Length: 195
Ligand SMILES: Cc1cc2nc3c(=O)[nH]c(=O)nc-3n(C[C@H](O)[C@H](O)[C@H](O)COP(=O)(O)O)c2cc1C
Image 1: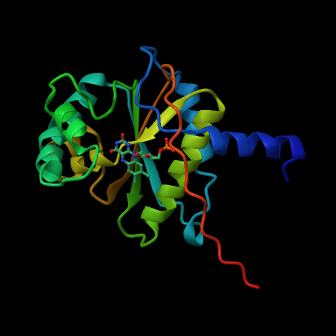
Image 2: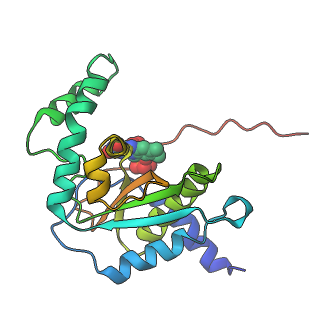
Image 3: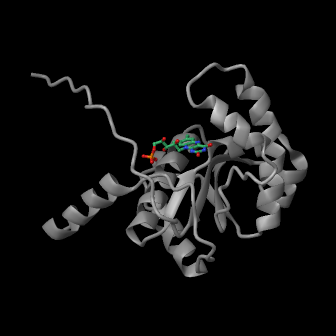
């Protein structure tokens, strides 16, 4: 069980964590990535099946290749969506310098076993543990859902060593944060109390 002081620490990590989209140019130690993954696998998972595995990508040119593959598909997908904020994202996607991975030094793919029905949920819980653990040790992260498009590209899947019997559930980037943006606020939760 956690002590009162530890509990305060956990709540503050949960409260303060935010998606980081700007990183300093500094590599992450492998031990930090191992510690983050070790926290990930402590997540609850249906039937205790632990249907996850991980690919750690530090090869920036491969990340660039993956980003360059996803960008035009994303631009095409969201091009017709008249939602606020979309114009800026569209412009960024057309910039050759822009990376959907925000120049982070590491991408970790959380892969879910296809044969396990709960693997998407299990891997999402694992991913949240990883992002919280990272924040607790001063490492920023962001779930880059756009990168799931990699799933459509057999060459990239091969290069990223994603086995056929797994799919990409959570593409997570990690790195040391540049000066942080404020965390987006949250609506008051709607809670129904019974009674
Ligand atoms: C399933 C999922 C997909 C996401 N995909 C992206 C993405 O492709 N690019 C990005 O910059 N952020 C992405 N995010 C991060 C969200 O935009 C972010 O969590 C949300 O705006 C709340 O901000 P916060 O994480 O700073 O609290 C994604 C988050 C989740 C959970």
